[in-house]
Image 1 (spheres, rainbow, N blue to C red):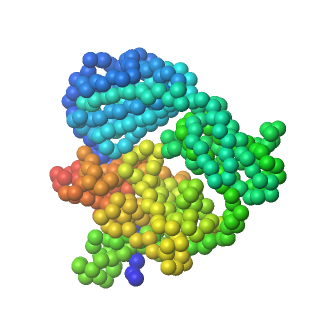
Image 2: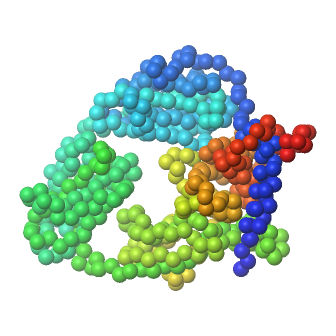
Length: 481
């Protein structure tokens, strides 16, 4: 199967983009500003925020060139739900929740017209709500604030566990929950902690009656498991919230006499079916073409825990190899639109919340006829297919331009199927915005992706005195190019 040699094309495109950028970089990605007037709160600042309360809705708010700031007294153990929706405007609004000391508690900076933050404080706490326009955006928006009281659910658990049993409870504030375990000395057991998505990072520790640690699992995330062979009949499973995390969880105790896990090795290829042949595919226009994806993150995960056991980046031919100790029925592959190496770190996501990439998870490896030949091929009309093609083109372009002396280049690419930007496809200092509109999508337009990335590279890594220009064919002084 032929592989598109984008490196030669991208060098030519980058050289062309660098010349064009001299005539347009300063004005290309900057949005126009919609005229609007201040709302009834008037001008607010971080030092003079407007007071708001829970269980309120306001549909007549505006951001007009300056940020909006609000102050809220948030009670302990009340889950705040804060939603803003851009009704009409120019660009994109984002939000963040901060303490009075300006510590960021939560953010929402998606590429859609709606932003949503959920947050639970462990104590009574005044907070600041910050609304701002991305890249100078302006517009009218609505805001709702609501709260759900969790304090009645925070009583300490008293139930113990025997093999084959499970229980549900909740970690609240800084208190750890303790569950007695009734065991058979000498019989291996497994204790599994499954926290809710909203619970944050929960840890699991097994203690003896004197409080000494027997075993522990404290990885990142909300799922933990420990396996051990008890010497006594009674121990304690302690569930802790890492750095104040709180939330619901399920704890189960099971025999693990059959938990001897062998090492599993899997190999395969990550590819995307292009909607048209690549430049050097040799295919006819009607024939499908599968592009091997280079630089995608591939992980071997334990589906029971949801944690990665091994990780790698797909090679230039899309291939990967992973090995870890895991039960075949629990082993799955996860591919994400994220790449990190010594030269660059790139994420392709639908929104900027926590730099979350697109991901796809395979079926259990035990269901594949040959785990040494797993094909992870994504359709061109899938969200994952578009995101991986963007990641592939961005990686190839960066590898063809960046030298060993260049500081590691970091970029977030925002794209979503059907999503559109006020600029079509464009760039800012730290974000690459790629159009996914049905009328003019760019996720498979390699030249557009490389062109806009070239603008970002010039903007970030060079100095020039170009007065700027346009991309709409308007006459431009040739001395600018």
